[in-house]
Length: 162
Image 1 (cartoon, rainbow, N blue to C red):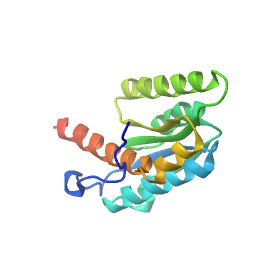
Image 2 (image 1 turned 60 degrees about the vertical axis):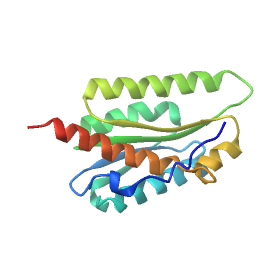
Image 3 (image 1 turned 120 degrees about the vertical axis):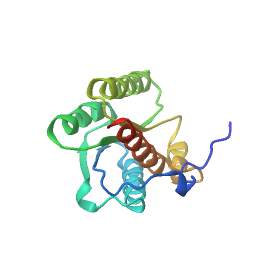
Image 4 (image 1 turned 90 degrees about the horizontal axis):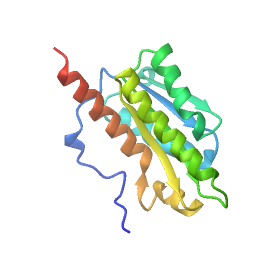
């Protein structure tokens, strides 16, 4: 199955993010991958006008803790959107399934509970190479894609406001 380059997009299709504020929650587990995702997300946010002081980054131990870290942003910081960045790599047990299901459902729940964009930037791969390929490798950087999605979702919400 082919995967598109996650870092390629029509730059003109992304609105300015000059007055937007973002929280990033980054999993420390598989940090060699998640740190690259975070670098990509931050770079993309800046490319679209977000200032350093409007990008807040916090770390959690693993991907399972991402939803709670994101909830802290919703409750304790004034952010327009939260980007969750993690990496879960399939192992020999069903642990992968539980972690992926938990972080996915947690992210969905946050979107609906807080009426705020919580962007799922979690790699769920079969092996380390697939993760590398999606964290700055041959398929681009999922962090870039997550940042673009966050900007577009904040812009969408702002367009509903009167």
